Amino acid sequence: MSLYSVQKLLFGLNRDPAVRARYETDFDALLGEYDLSAEELEAVRKPDIGLLYVMGVNGQILMHYAALRGFEWDAYIAAMREGEQRYGPVRTGLYQRARTP
Amino acid sequence: MSLAFAGVCSHAPGITGRSQRADPALRDGFYASLERMRAALEATRPDALVVIAAEHFANFFMNNMPSLCVGMADQYEGPIEDEQWLGIRHTRVPGNAALSQRLIVSMMNDVDLAYAQEWKFDHGIMVPLNFLTPRYDLPVIPVNINCQGPPLIPLKRCWAFGRALRRACEEAPERIAVVATGGISHWPATPDSGKINERWDREFLRRFLANNRGELLAYTDEETWIEAGQGGFEIRTFIALSGLIEGSKCELWFYAPIPIFAVGCTVAVAHLPGALTNPPGANDTARP
Image (cartoon, rainbow over all chains, first blue to last red; front, side, top):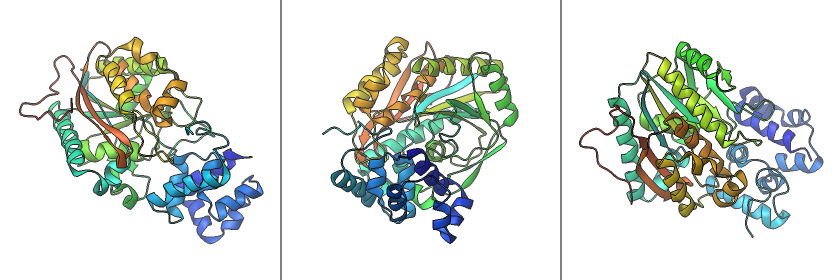
């Protein structure tokens, strides 16, 4: 797992116009610059917002990537809930134990 | 002079970005309290506004995360987020690099700080400014306390930072206002967004309003996280303000959970000796 790399990629997409421009023009080349597992690559590329949440991506980073990929607020919340149902509890990071059963 | 004004308010992005989806009665009462805070702040004729905030991966990331950082620029900008998403237009915000530097140099005698000559404000600062300095004509000095990416600074160090800022303010000839902004209990940007632990919030506010150092510093992050969510780590900004006004109490002007704003919306202002923080004719909109 390389949660740090996933979050760094999404942080760059959220905040750095140069990274955003590369997302627009050559997303695959941009993704190649980060140390991501096959599962992480797929989750970012698809995007699978629920899986990214379960992987431990901080919501303060994830919500902006979700918006970039066209998720309205309610759809973003629903995607995280569906992710938990499909993939299980958050695996690592700040939210690992945050949800009560 | 000195500290001219001190208070706290919420900053959640929904406050402006999802305003149309809130219960109008609650929302308008909250907005009215923020407007009252603006009037009170202006009445103290401040030369600068220090905003003690808890940003959300706007400028700082885990590659180089400062626990405490103070802006030192003559100009800032924000919001860094999408204007439509936040409901606040992108703008430039004046700073005061020389005053920042004097405050930083003074505070460094007591606390270790990072400083930043570039800073793009996220909702954590822009939402308060949207209400408190809507013309963006008051120089702002941003402060960030890392409340997002653990390890986080201990609460007692937040209090110490507030005390250091108070001393720095008292050494400066300018009239300085300070607003701290954070959530109390909240689970922002998660599936639990909208959940608010009002009971926990009101107990925290009791301790905060009384400026009870021992009770405020007694919280552990484990307890906060269970009862108040990861957003509860932002009590660090409130505690820094408590250190700033050590010995003075605060008055609660508004508290109400507004779930679509994802936080218990709060406005409180300190009773500072000699400061005009409660202009005549203001309406108290705090819920008992």
